[in-house]
Length: 121
Image 1 (spheres, rainbow, N blue to C red):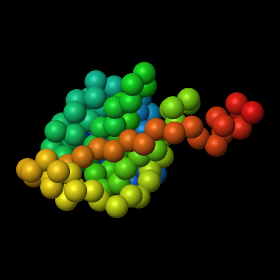
Image 2: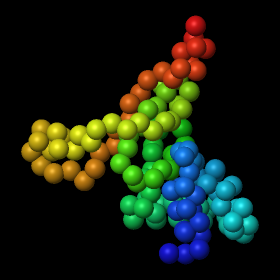
Image 3: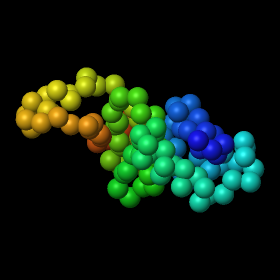
């Protein structure tokens, strides 16, 4: 693993946010001033392919990156706010219904966050 890969992996795994590539790039520049955005994208793709981080794709929004620890997400349908939620693992239920094993699932629960509900009033 390269120095830049380690920096990027550390940024993603130590963050409590769901960072975009650009946000990761800005944080990485603090540790490695010569890093370029293309290097960040290349490393994010490699780290995702290796299963060391996960990519969260949201329609109409840049991809975000997250830890691989088992959890699900709440997505505000209005503002796109992304939050973690700890729900019971339903892998066994999915496998039983499908009749085959699965690698993983990615559950995104869409809702209207409190801030957006308040703004709508």
